[in-house]
Image 1 (cartoon, rainbow, N blue to C red):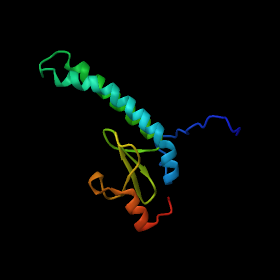
Image 2: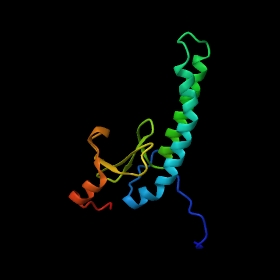
Image 3: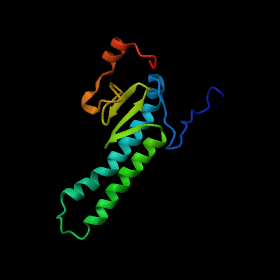
Amino acid sequence: MPANAPEITQIGSLQEPRIFTLEEAEDLFPLVRRITRDASNRLEPIKRRLENMLATDPRLVAVEKDYEAVVKCWVKKMERLGLVVQGLWLVDFDTGDGYLCWRYPELRIGHYHDHSAGFTGRRPLDEVIEELDPDWV
């Protein structure tokens, strides 16, 4: 590949599990963060509209559909990149033995948790690397 050729992120099938090294996750991270930031920015005005609507407002169903469309689009993009979506703006990069964990608006991938642990079980990534010296580093 020529030195000035743009790098293209491979998008896979939703059925294909993807295993990441830390370097691969960090390489993909700017794209993941940008997509998430853009989706979050699109969702904010919709959330404000929902917060200010009465439950009897006839426009409520349409606004809820708009909300759902933004979230579903974001989820689909994350899954196509090989990530595991754990919640709104919360994704995991599978390392094979656990997850590199990130939640928007964090500035970097800074946490890890085992497959059996969830968000509450996440630990600082530096601590895990020092303690376990995993082969995905």
